[in-house]
Image 1 (cartoon, rainbow, N blue to C red):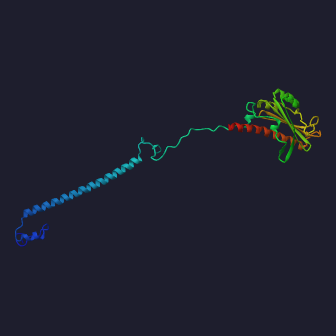
Image 2 (image 1 turned 180 degrees about the vertical axis):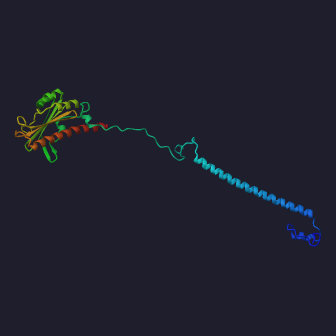
Image 3 (image 1 turned 180 degrees about the horizontal axis):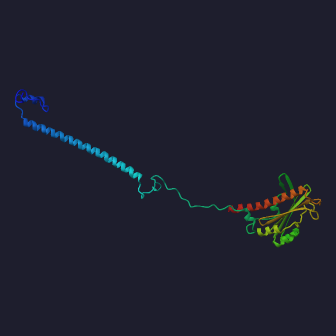
Length: 288
């Protein structure tokens, strides 16, 4: 069967009404070929255009990936000229307040105030240094007796002590007596201008360097001819001495523990009173 006879072939690109219009007419094969070529050309253009768009999309995705990768590389390879994290100022942080460095002054040393006449300016007397009418040390209570003060230090001492006091320029000598159960003790405090003088007086005193006991106010004379127990010490610009014995004139022996205890108690109390004198003056100076 030839294409010149019978029904025309079905053209899938024509509608049904167009198909019926052909009837028995012979188709224009040249026109059909041209139309088919035109349609194929449009399809190829559409495919090429779609491919181009796909290429652009893929290219954009690759570009994004490259940019992202480059960003990661830059973050991991920070140039040396960028500031360190600690140097980058925060947008919300406020500068901390700054203060000038200060140094607290050292505490005042109480001993400084009793080591020189220039600083040791508080009032001084036997009753100030030994206040009240009695003294309590632990469970022992001592009754306070007479007091005395003189600028002639040698007159309040005996044995080798007068020469020691005079040599080191003693300026004042204070005495007080306490008693308990037939035992009496006189405390003598020699006052010097400097600690050096008091320390030398203590070092130069020997076993024969003793003070003169102070009697009166109910205390009989003691330790004038009998053997008594004495002590010597110093603190700051003060040298202090004790002379303890029996009120009845009995000699003191090494077995008389109560006499030793009495003398030690009064020596300890004297040291505390001198130290407290320094503490009071240091506290007053710090409060100014």
